[in-house]
Structure formats: C-alpha cells, structure tokens
Figure: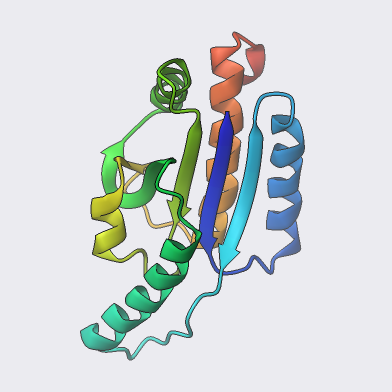
Length: 159
C-alpha cells in the first residue's frame, strides 16, 4: 500500500516526532507511508466564526494543492464513524484487495478541517469523541496504521 498523511501544521514536540518516526520505521516492511505537512494559519481564542471559516478555507486551499484525486481520501474528524483498530485493519485490507491501495488520510489543524474537505472524503473516521491535539492525532494515526498491518498479518502486536 501507499499511504499518505496530509497534516496541517508542524510538530514541534520532540517526543511526538520520535514516536511518529518509530512507527514510520516499523511500517517500512508493510507499506510506503509518507507525511506531508501544510502550513497552518495563526489562530487565537477570540476569533469570530467568520475568522475561523477564513482560516479553515486557507488551510483547505493548501491541502487541495497536495491532494491527488486518484487516491482514496479518508478524513480524521471527531464526528466521523467511530471505529476500532480491527475496523481500520479490515478497511485497509479491503481497499488493498479491491485496487484502492493509494490512500490519503487528512488531519486538520487546531480548528479542524473545512466542511468541503469532509464532504470530499470517501470516509470520515474518528478514534473517539474526545478532543485530541492535532499533533498527537498524527502519532495516534500512524500507530493505528501500524497496528492494522500487524492485525492483518496475524502478528501478536495487537494483544
């Protein structure tokens, strides 16, 4: 499989980068996995809805510039389908079997993703209704992708 993660913003925390890099290293024997970072917009706690929409639109434009329409698009969204590790493993296996082995996952910035991107996705998924920082979500997603491949290979990591 060829998995791409497009994420808004850079990760500054060393421990998160170390964790992400460890899972990327582990994934090399299963799939090609790449991460594309797009610039985030400055935000503050006093933004109006119009300002929030403007930030989301600017970030969406940057994401659109990196999207490839031939790839299966999956959006990480808190309101998406609640899935388990096993569900993700089955979905990735299904996509690979049915010729959709190029998958892009989108992770928004601190304000999430523009609705247009969510509508464009083939699948919206959520790892729970709790709010996670978007930087931490990247680590969780990479780990869950690794776990999916381990589940599909019948390896013990999942226990």
